[in-house]
Image (cartoon, rainbow, N blue to C red; front, side, top):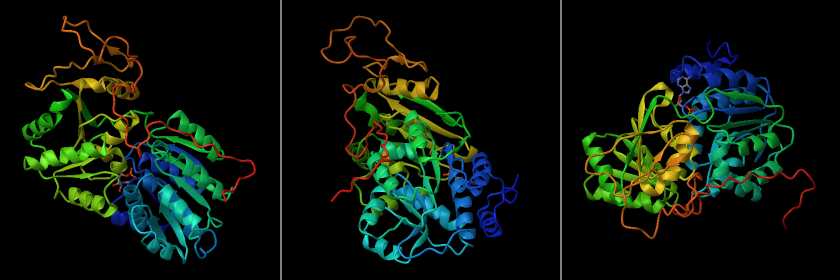
Length: 445
Ligand code: AMP
């Protein structure tokens, strides 16, 4: 199968040739003809499967071949993404694919001045990539109109809900024309997302190119158990022992990112961090330097690292386990991309046993544990398995403790609020499905 047999036009084929894409990936093989035929789509595809080209190529073709010329402040196709970095990344891919087409494309996101974006939108844009918050700001300031909108893409839809964008999505949805094509992409598909899809999509074609909620099997995954306070020390030890060259490290909180970066820099390691509190330009610079191998260790929160495409990233380290189990799949999806092999190491302390159990249940595997001599934890991490059970072995009597254990906690529950510190305000682990009001609209004054 070739891109030509999928029905793509010559200007796009030339761009793909320049990029070195020879064969369509499975998600592209299914999505491209369906989108060209005008179908709505609900696609579950892992990160690194080529899903961006799967929706962007046919979308660009439809924009180039059909529909009226874009008018002032209008947009004909809208791609919604959860983060600024992803907006840049998706737009960069779109720009490359559209190189030989007479289309205007642009990306808008928060954290940067809105005025240049308003100026740019004045003459209209064929394809706009946007984060939900900034898109709404622009719409409310009359810098954007949706009357010409023919296609909406929700990329990483599950993540948009995770990040608390349900309200924004519902507001955007209300402002869009009812007659349009909608494509919903997500690396993982929860029941909430299926509910959302039911509200937004019209007779969608379902595409599932990989088993639901299964991490890429090209990634070697293992766990090292350790006491919480010794994690930084263990990290440096493993880094030196394994002669790590380029590592993306995930920490739970912004403070956690800053603290680890400071510790690493303090022992002479070339490290930088990205999180939601940092200005966009600083985040982008750190990322660019990491991609160019000028920074060895990049420490990030989930928000900042979402959707990053870093070529040949060999190793991901979970310094902290994610609070939302599905984030584990996204995190380790940064390595082992497009069929190459990768490694994902998680440093797990006793507090995180329920998070570990949830990950194992979601990915249907028991993660291999490897003890690091001299780092065996004093606070043992109970055994876990893919059934979601935390196996509490009877232990030799120890002096009684006042906190932890006691047999009172519900260990089958994967987020025990007593065990994990609350997430940062911008990271909402609990999904809210937007309720799209189809009745008469109540306008805010
Ligand atoms: P995505 O899953 O969209 O983030 O894509 C992951 C990576 O695969 C990106 O670097 C793309 O440029 C690349 N890619 C996508 N489709 C193809 C293809 N058909 N052949 C080769 N590389 C591809």
